[in-house]
Image (cartoon, rainbow, N blue to C red):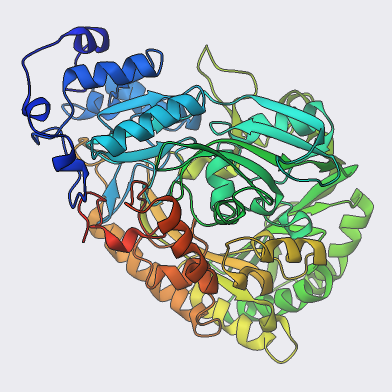
Length: 600
């Protein structure tokens, strides 16, 4: 059906279907099973045409680009596809695929039957009403970055917000119904990706909005899942910067949600999970003054033995607590089975001399044991004007090899993504787990325990500590604002988020010579789990980050939201009593089968 010509299909009347004869509410009222194209309750061609008319001709059959490879991986079309799926902008411009292509033994990307290429809240409301009245599986996709496949489902109707990417800065924003003082803000359409926001706010307006680290992640999805960027250790969570949202709820109403209007829905949108409480059409976020400088520290240390590596980890833990556990420093340190410590950190508000001075004691310690430790390349430690952090032209001019570019002839010149994010484009996940690491582990009497756990874990897989995704060490304002979100409160007391992951890509089932290696994937997933268990032994019950976690997360309600889940559940019931908005491991998802089609 999806392969039919759109115009021909929507204009053709065809024979009268059973769904036109049987009462529609037989399928929609108290539904226990959503309909698929093979079911008698599937909407008629006339019904789809009416929806198309209602959305201004923006109902489209969804093509599946992967089809180009399912017969042969040697064809020109397939080779073009395999090159393109390494490009997140190509993926984002196609409603039929997602940034992650699947997860072994969990899910694989599948196209919806139709998509509403929404241009405004009215289009979204028409799609929501149509899905509700016809008992359809509904999916919402903006950036399409979900590791857990929440922005795609076969046999569904897709609300695709990619084209809703207007960005407007306001100097005197006041949320609707509020009497607060005017403040600087930026309003974005729900299809906006973060680089579009940063280009407008930072590169062009020399200001700052707290968003995500990956340039191609959708603004709306990140806000609804909490959201962290490179500088969250100073500014806090992205969700905490939400001032107002325009959202279409399951009844088809376009609602404004802020601290004064629909405040319960507003709170749920700040970290309660994307695509769960409604379909967001517009967001307004706080804009801040831009510091003059930002920078980074990048280097790799190789230890000559396991014993030397254990000492290196122990020393780094103490050094982090002493010199880096503050709101200047964010991003990552990696601990690997090959006895390497990779530092990939960023800093805020320090000049080059100040940032190098911070690290000098660490390098002095390494020099005292030069036979045990080797710095693999000259450390890169320095600063740059913060206004150029996402400035593509400036990066080219200064030979800053940080980005990869969209090579398509029609691409915008700002279509770039960080080199460090390239590995997740078009990949298939084998295993992925996260864990909030409590700051109590940095206390003098616990540092040895933390270092030993990191060493033991690193024997199994590479461990990432992402310091910007834990708010311990942040200013009190950032922590207090995080407490007013739906996120697991554990984030406020965590100094980092630990992540262990494995995958391959690009890969997809059915593509000759590009199949996911399921056996290798299962072995890797087991290693990921055992690796994380070494950290759980010292940080038990601290929870995980909803956007970056295990598809098979045990006790996800507690893990993702902690005590806040008890508050989220009735909000879900209030605004979506029949579960129209379903996502895997979302609030209320336990009432449905894993595919979201059958109510339990």
